[in-house]
Image (tube, rainbow, N blue to C red):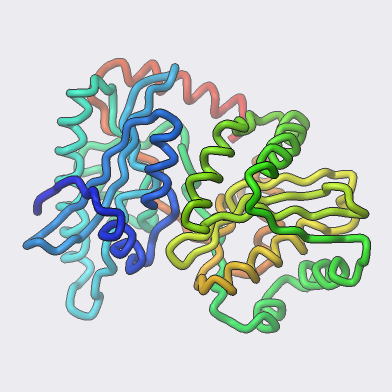
Length: 352
């Protein structure tokens, strides 16, 4: 297998369109966004006999806690034919793809003076996939950069079928909100409204004690995906007052519920339920087959986790959980251990 940089957006996006397991963190536009945030990126393709088998967007991270190369939710791979290939053959192919990628990233890391390589894969969490990383010398990272599990809903059904498959309470709250004349749902692609969302997000984060994304970050993300009509801001209002909002990305046949915020003052009106339902319907309208609620923890196993409440909310819409291989690090320098300690402390402080 060979690896080379891909500089053609169409080649990248066409390949991704035919991959089943993916998120927008491996989209062409996420790379554009990272560059807007002044991060250096590489887009690699892994080929065999000129056939593209996998792609991997790689980001150079220069953080105070350490310097490393990051492959967010990648590499993403072509759909393997389980009728012609057995599990061992597929595992061997994955291992070869990862090995070729790792060798390339090690060379770049040396040139860029990076301390380690971090891969946050979207591969199914299985013993076979875990073994691939172990055998190549990766260790489990102290924190996750992006979700290591997600709640997803197949939306290639009629609207009434989707409603029937929801938790009874969720369906009831959506219908009650629909009947309430004081509730309005608005959609926006106006850049001015990003500031409105940002202010709301900041208020909610202060109350819930987490670090919000900056206005600069949200604006750059919005403008990058807006250029291809891949993002919408949803606002839920009660008597004209802002009550809930969400940032939804639509990419490669999937809708992603990326950022959200709501004020507890309006909790009794169930506006976030209707807001989510409108986003799902928009995804259907755009021809998406899947809706990714972004981020999942098992509320039964981790009832005190900060995501436990939001996860219960997401589960009410129907769907199932998808667990990925844990974030993995490949050490290149002893300086890694300073990063490890800092991230471990952060994780404990945040209750994650």
